[in-house]
Length: 334
Ligand code: AMP
Ligand code: MG
Image (cartoon, rainbow, N blue to C red; front, top):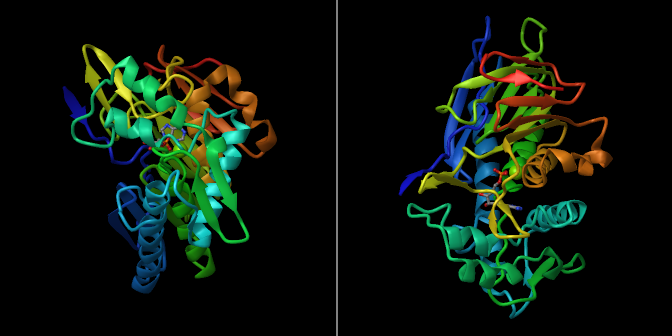
């Protein structure tokens, strides 16, 4: 079984023209490569502050750190509520909001499915239908009980487990951007494993150019270029973490209604908007629900744009997207 842990960057940035970054810093956190580029004023102290914050968020929200808030909540599932940091509480609250908005297509209690498929480990496998049926009752965001008075979280069933893999990177990206803006830095790029925030504009006053990953080619191959200013771009796709078995590709985004990787003709779904945490959740939701049910985004319009890439290489974008196809094997079909 060939497993490819695709933990690198979902969408990569095209540095075009005269943009020479003063400096950038790359580190591994939140299960991915995190890269920050500060133009003009690449102060060490600011990089330190940003990465300290990213690591703090990881230490609170990672399922892989035994002392994290999320691990403590999961260990106490079916036993007792756990008091957590206000940041963790807020992100879980937002995840529950998106679970409700999406009718459960997005579900932060997806943890037992992620473990069963072993998708984040070196030896993933296709579980039996019996195994899937056994964990499905545990996947239910309604069984997350939040108490804002005490900032505590309770999973009502033993065996339940939270997984914020689809929203925490977006939150961390927003926090990094907040530090950069507070420091008065006018132009910067935040890229946390494909959760991108472009701050300001290019030196030549043109919009930033962001490449959208070709979902079926090697990392760095792009299907087209998106032009944006002061926006976040987040993509959910089949290519970030996956394995192939008997000619079938199994990826890391699960449909909580059946316990299998979501399957609806999509290769990727990209969201362009203002808040990266929301974009992170929304791209996952769109990837699970598929193109036909995209109007779940209704509340976010007109502030949110989308790019859907389909298995037949067609692309559908919303009207407000400035996107140019650069790979001639793909085509716009709006
Ligand atoms: P993303 O790449 O942001 O779409 O997030 C995918 C990650 O979120 C996976 O690696 C899982 O940890 C988690 N996940 C998978 N399926 C779901 C789902 N339906 N709802 C919420 N989180 C999910
Ligand atoms: Mg996401």
